[in-house]
Amino acid sequence: MPSPSSSDNFRTPLETLRGLLKGFSDQLSNVNRPSKNNVLNPPNALALLHDSASILRAQGTKLSLLLINKPFTPSAIAAILTSVSGQCLPGLMCVYEICSLEAYGNTTYNEVRNSLRNLVTAVHRLADDIESMAELAEAGADADANEEREDIVGKREDILQVTGQVWNVCDRMIAIANKGIIGVAIDKVKEWEALIKDAIDEIEEWDPDAEDDFNMDGNSDSEVGGSRQVMKEKEDGTNSIKTNGVKHQGNDIKHQSNKQPPSLDSLQITDIHSAKTKALKLLKLIKMLYPALRKRRISTFPPFTRTSSTESLQPRSQVAQFSNMVQFCDDFSTATDDLADALYDGTVSLVQGKMKLMTTMAARCIDGVRKGWDGEEDEFSAWSEKWIARVKEVAVEIPKEELKFYQEFSQRWLRSD
Image (tube, rainbow, N blue to C red):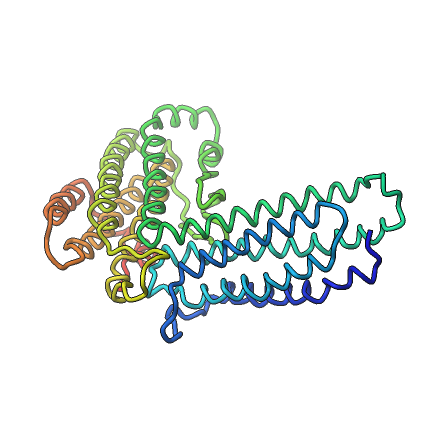
């Protein structure tokens, strides 16, 4: 075991690492960060992401081996910490600066940002475990070499766990770099499509008659809907939980309407059945859009991966058009949750409003991608005209008394940018 003085060798690089992590965390938390990249002739952000993450993964492996095996070697640990602070973290901080919304699109930007946040958290935990292991090593310097202290064994298990977290985040960043802008977008669109499919299946299984009978037995609507107010979905390896009208997703929170619906037994059950039928027709049409967009618009977007030259990045206007299309796929998923909630609450007028809103969203989405990326009409152009016509046939008008209520709600989608 080392003497206390020998373990001081790595404390300076450890504090340097913590300082960099603190500054990086502040950058990632800055909501006012500009979406534009002001770096002249920036390198390929995905290539830098891949290389920095690969080096960090390797260094994390070396570090964990040094920490869990005897003897405790502060000088070797200090060398790795210096490499992480001098190469890996600066490279990843540069990625955050040059991977802008306007150049790489919203999906890639968000995936990179979320991965970097998770990485900072994991590396910070690893730094804490390094210090704890050093203290345990110093405290056990005079102990019997043949005895394995339980606290050291437990700390080794903690180190293995947090090292696994570092590996997972690095693997995710390497995958983002390899898949590129198109591959990342396709993965996310598939996730959102799966959520809509789940909602459709759930609505089809839902029986308004059975729920109405249950209410008449003396239970409140809040009790009946309680099982539906907690919804979990897989999002980048984390759970998304929806409770009390607020959707929690990682570090993001999407607030939804707090308007209280009337009780189910105050409505005509035939109206609810009709609303369910129309909602299912609309949602099935919305779901049809996803594979069409993936095949005809996302997959045909000019590719950009870690091996691409920065000259192959598309014009800002075209990237914005691509981002808006992908964002609508996310918005449709959120709107589907809202529509399902309104349906389960038995508020027919609210269901009508949500359907009208989704119809407007669909029209805006198609307007932005009706033509191909070369500016010419294609097979998707003709298909999209028939598709949006059918969507409008299914949708219903919002009652006049509901217009004011939906005006503020709809601003999130009915934007001009």
